[in-house]
Image 1 (tube, one colour):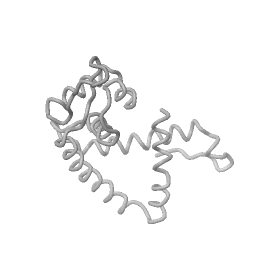
Image 2 (cartoon, one colour; image 1 turned 90 degrees about the horizontal axis):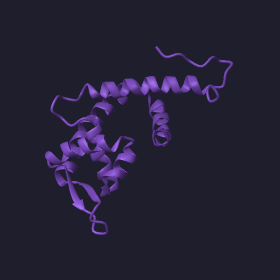
Image 3 (cartoon, helix red, strand yellow; image 1 turned 90 degrees about the vertical axis):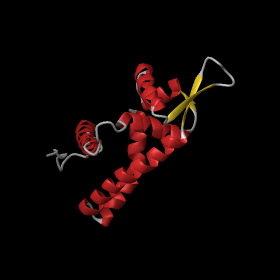
Image 4 (cartoon, helix red, strand yellow; image 1 turned 120 degrees about the vertical axis):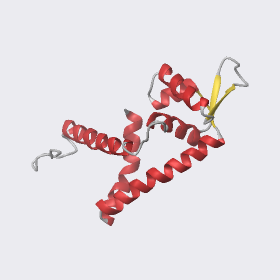
Length: 153
């Protein structure tokens, strides 16, 4: 059970409490989403990399690692697995032959669409069962804030 900020304190100023509660809640959400992950399926890290390539387009591995906030070595491992399964391709940069750009393949985009559907369906079912219309509205309003927060970590 999460703690709450005492009534006499402004929750916006007790950043340590807010940060801890948000970390705990988001951790629970991620763990529960991972429960739907079957052995042999793409990991959340692989799906995140593939999703970023799908959204942002072709980019060098170094930039991708930086945006995903992982080491270049970890990115190399993730990309190798995705490439082996035909989900991403590597192409030499036309402007700089030393640089390699990564792209999601049609198979990678199709896999994402299917995974998004399954994960989104699980999330939509939970949203419908656990939250009121007003609460869902608050959550929708918080999504851009959470995205900005993630970019700042």
